[in-house]
Image (cartoon, rainbow, N blue to C red; front, side, top):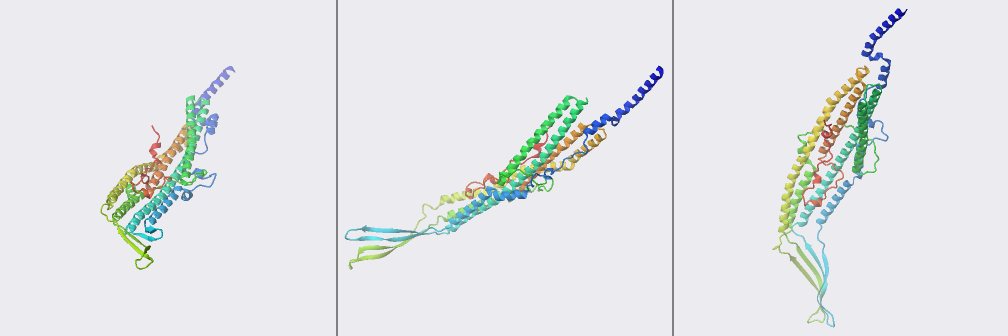
Length: 486
């Protein structure tokens, strides 16, 4: 019996020895490991997608059309531009008004006593403007009215461009917030997985701490992105002239219908068609009108004076006063010393400067457009590369890793790391899209991106066109600035 028991024990040990290698090669045969695998594995893979915030918003979606409507009604700079037009037209009207006549009292050799004498009466005086000086002055102020109208058109374009830019930044911040939150959630899952693996002896504490630190960092990044979204919304609300506007979910699509620009021609288009170029043209035309007006100013005006006086002197032959007498005067100033030559020379210098200003503005616009065109081209290249190659590859890699995990051929941490990489690339893609939009909008808007910059006054045409008219967008985003550093 004792020999039989030993034989049975030996056979049992041999049988178990044959089963253990099989179990090691196929973990699915181990019930405990299968249970742990099922507990950690999600039912379906999770992929990033755009527009999720717009699917179930807490309030009605805020549209770009509504934003433009609010800006047209509330942005104060548009009202300022309208006020400048009214002021310029009023100055134009004033410049063509004829001088008012003068009336007055005149007396000569007045005396009292028993023997009255002297002369007393009234007169009217009028300046006759010659040489068409009023019409030439009106032409000068008509050019100022044109400047004010061009400035108002530029300000309208500036506000529209600023609203588009600020709206796009809100939309991009909204999309980034969803992605940042997803990244934080993925990293939290990885930390929890590493903690479970530590409990089963399959990971060490350093791996757990590293995962937890990364999860904390990404949670912080998500909270910072929330602040960024609020900041961009406040910027948009201020541009609209409605700082009290409550935060809302904006509607839009970053991936499609972005600005399509000819990179070779856009700089030339901006240099020749920008409102700043039109302002320089109008300023030169005003300088030409001013020099003509200055030359006409040397033509003297006529001074006419006429009236009636009563002469109290007695006639020699008749014992009563001489009576009413008429008076008339005509005078003209002789342009001997002052022929307005100084003002004519100054106007000629202003005309030379205005012509050179047109050249300077064109060169400045080309120089400032070059940087934005480069940023637009780089961002567009990145966005296309991410959309057509990088993201599809990352998505495929994550899908394959998920399928391997389902077959117990890959660990859960590797799946989560692959998913995290996919979402990180998605965040970079969103930044590239934002840069395509903001730089493209800036180029379409002739680089006019500050919707709260006050319009220039037409009365400032005695100096070069203000730099406000050819600004460098200081908040355009280059996607290269957000690329991860090695």
